[in-house]
Length: 260
Image 1 (cartoon, rainbow, N blue to C red):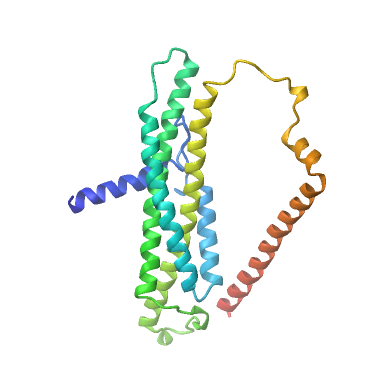
Image 2 (cartoon, rainbow, N blue to C red):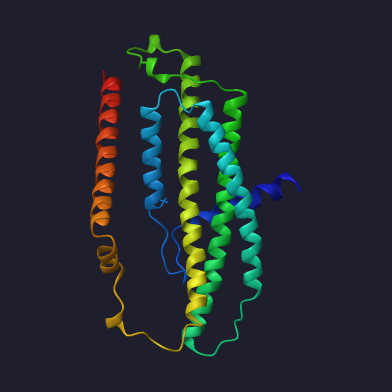
């Protein structure tokens, strides 16, 4: 395979992976105006916060953990792609009613979506793995907290500026790609769930249950775990509020230091 073919395949993979992050099963959604989806913009924001608040980067233990986790996930996704392709070959498009035709089209697109997102997530994981390995082999922990903005042009250190810029860009890209990997994983799992759900609904039981005899999930939770359900909700909200307050203060201090 020559370089041109490899570049074409990579760009096609990126294009399809980006497309199926906003597209639905009937291909009626429009492309985001700012290219990235809402979740991707959130990932960009979180990656920026990470670079601002974590001056020394990732520790060796965290890098080892991420390398192991991403390697396992990559192998799992490769196996899932093969399994899903076998399911694709079993699809029967010989249907009569319009509803069945729509469902088959959705099933087909859900498999396409899963294939694109899973393949794209593998590609993203390989990028993150490459960055992490590069950090272990050639990089070292650089603390950017001791770096201050120059007050005049003569105080600018060109080599140091380039070095810090590369470090910041690499850390930002690594964090963003890592977050995007989890976003893609959620999308891929959701599309696989939708495909399985449609296929199951096409073969649903011929009888129905009396709704008066069945409790809703909320009522079942309150009935079976009346106290634990309330405690769990309170703990979750306290954790979320605590994280927001904690990170907000750190970001405020970092921005204040940069301004000064």
